[in-house]
Length: 65
Image (tube, rainbow, N blue to C red):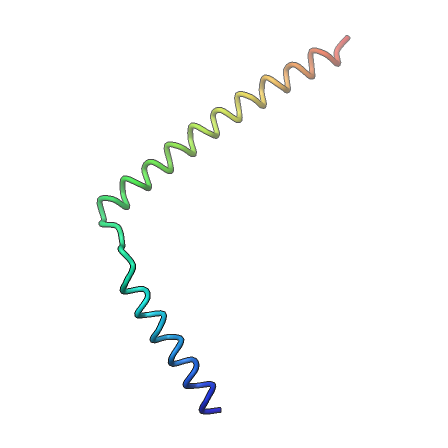
């Protein structure tokens, strides 16, 4: 059982060491990235909704004969 606890402790310490090596974004960078993702999401949603409406109206037009 002691070996398992040593492995867990080693894993946690190694993980903490690796996390300290990471470069984390500043608060401003995180905010800018979040805004960019939200804008991209809105634009892609609008684009897909437009394509969906075009295809829906085309299929409805073709099937109403």
